[in-house]
Image (cartoon, rainbow, N blue to C red; front, side, top):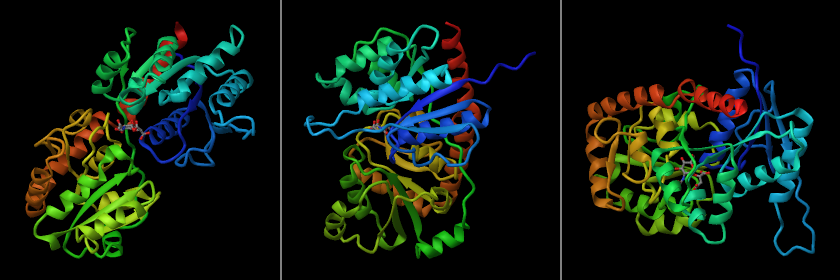
Length: 378
Ligand code: GMT
């Protein structure tokens, strides 16, 4: 059978630390490794996109800070760059991650191009583009329009698909394609990382996030303050933003010697392999990539049963899910797992198996490739 021709794929995402940008970057890297020609279009090179990979090109969007505008505009220069890249390389597909403003810019770019040069637009919704902005009367109608005009729309969980249909009264089909994670090899040994953190025999609880409001760092610290005995653990936070705003609360709760923070870590696998338990307290997550990252290193998580989290990890089998906001229940669940390494190992092994079976690049990337080919054939 003849091999299908490689595709030319444009990817737009937020380049900073955040699940949607990380997912888009990993997807681009995987697609390039599978022979496709991948073009990232954004205001900065996404931070996990390697510099030296064949078939991976970055096209920066330059924004002029004209004095006549009170608010600088990104949507128009982005759409112009999308159209320019599309025209010059002949993009088959423009895959945008996070609807605002990427989906709107993609539709505009497609409209600007002549027939025969128009890429198919695939929009992937990641979370707050539906759950927050979709509900905002200043954004919702524009997002709904961009979704209606996209050639395909995907969400990263069934939960987010249902929310999108309801919040924006969407009637078009939406496909669920879950996030995936392909771990890189750690650069240091587990023992070396644990030494760096001064853990001794204590359990290492790991929290990885961008610290934004929905992550509810207040609850994370509250749970940590209630875990007994106090000396049984350290909470390691890999922070995608400045930790300074939380330091006062750490002191108030008497957690100064319990909490270790590392900001903007790139060798995340080093810490994942060293962790015993993930800890998350978000009020909303459409997926929660950090739980999946930990699962890949046989590290189960204690997390709230909100949004798409129960689709990622199964309570009692690959982790422990607790009703949102129940800090005492969460602290007790953490204590039980700190005391029971055998149970932790059992959950961890099942978590790893689930991650590899359902959320690996091999399980997920072919679903995107099939979707691209389907929209290109329309
Ligand atoms: O929607 C957001 O809040 C931002 C977004 C991001 O860029 O990190 O997070 C969302 O997308 C991630 C990747 O698909 C998911 O793992 C997060 O659960 C989701 N966040 C929310 O739903 C709050």
